[in-house]
Image 1 (cartoon, rainbow, N blue to C red):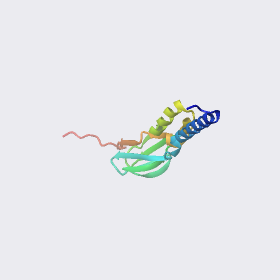
Image 2 (image 1 turned 60 degrees about the horizontal axis):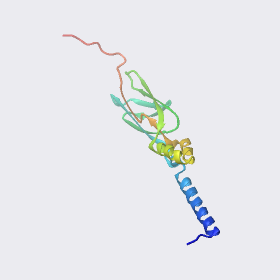
Image 3 (image 1 turned 120 degrees about the vertical axis):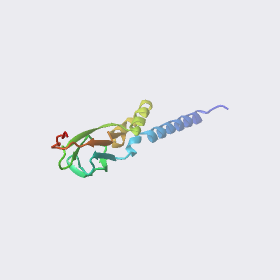
Image 4 (image 1 turned 135 degrees about the vertical axis):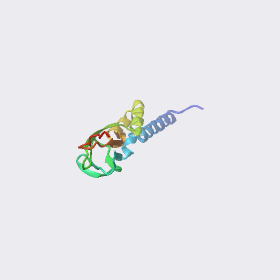
Length: 141
């Protein structure tokens, strides 16, 4: 069957529309990812106050929703114990990795890396052992 110039142009247009639709569909999966995640903080002994970026988040053991944007400073305080501070950083989430791979094929998925869903806090769980401020000297019998 011989194609006419009109059917050939229609076929090209349909292919172009399909490619555009696929590209837009795959664009920036991270845009649809969440803007927050759960941060878990445990301490020994439990019952310590937890401040995230200077704001009281609760007491240990704690599960707290935090933003995926930016680094976090996590302070753990308990009366009679030396306070401890941990800092989280950001790393690519699994959805962000998909955007990078898609970006190798089509440039548009790289736009998803601008969205918070492309990132996650690292570490997402923090555990500390609080040391007494005035440790008792060991006694010998």
